[in-house]
Length: 169
Length: 186
Length: 226
Image (cartoon, rainbow over the protein chains, first blue to last red):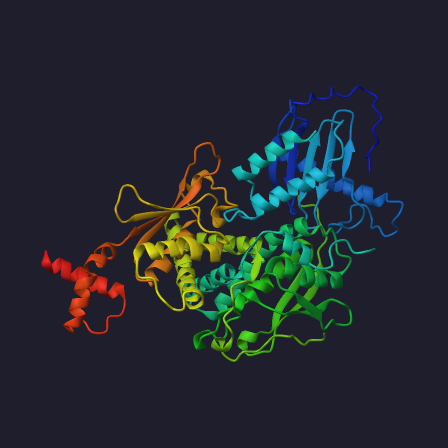
């Protein structure tokens, strides 16, 4: 869905050139709301400390999921707003766009949430997020010295991720 | 709703990287041997194997989801079929079957047709209480917990202990809703 | 199919035909199992050296079983008695069975007479790993070093085997080298083997069947003669 539509009242930032990098930042959360990874490529303005920032992002997605499911016109089976859902229950949104950025979101049935914030003109990133999930599985989940639920430090993953995100147009 | 995802794990298994089952079997044997030496008590070893399985399960679920493309299962029945037909095939190259459903569809048996963990294994008299394959029950429990299902998984038949098959009973205890993880809203 | 497995029942593991070694499991199943081996052993130690030693122990158990299996299957129970023979057996046959390929290289050490190196660009157990700085020189290859040691020891060639990362120029990932340093008795055993045979002829050491025993006797003899 397109949350809040894409009407551009104020001008959006210039589209980056081919060599530029479209990504602003990225988050990976696990099902317990732990931020496993935060990375930024282009974020000129920091107004919150990292903990507040992560919590706010997680809260935004949590509420948005609940709201979008509640408003689903095709499904009669919906709980009360704010009542916890099972992961994968109800409809799911995958992106929203403002005049200054686009947020793409993927959640797996195991509760891994991948969020990529990019330039508003970026296209559909669903396949890209799946690819990133694949990188996470290869380099994080299978790393024998990674303990689940801890922040991701793998250099292998970080390098592969950085390379891939820079290539997204 | 039509189930999303493959009906069998054959295609996935043939497309992913594989290793000789002997490396796997012998490594597992070395782990069990290490535990027997470290813990010296068969019950403790059973517990530790189950815990190790659980730890594997909570990781393995993401590999399963990423490689199988399964996005959801409509109910526990479909979940059990998915484990038996896709899960076992995808990881161990063997198939399993589901049977013995109870009336309300929350408890069933998974029967392994082949079990690569037990090649070359014969339990010595000193290990008679050992559930050699206990890692498998832990894996199922751990993986299902990550997709919001609390289960109890127990061995009902174990060929190493003289039964005629390997059979696991999987019982769904409850489904856990996703909750907002932060306590206060400061 | 209601509750009836198709499992064949063997009352004794020896009655079961030895598998031909063609069965496969997914690499990730092995990767997860191996991860758990590492994670469990991390809880049992307080330093990296100890962790590597425990991984080596686990590998050793695998190595000795592999030797048994392969001798049974591929060599018609004939044991390799030459040093180079056993090294090439490890580098090719053992590697092929366990890792699906022959090792990238087998070289003789340049600094010491009795050192050999088996190198692998991407060793299976190091494929998914990323070593954090606080773990220093930790190498999961210790497990494979243990496998190699298990094979060599049980074939009668005792050796100290260790795993090391070796950077390759122009590559981001280092390769893994398994360094094999044969125990002194092996290098002298070949040259003194004839004496052993002579001793045996004189019935001084009846019933010592393998070269390791021979080596032990000879080492003693060699010391006495100094």
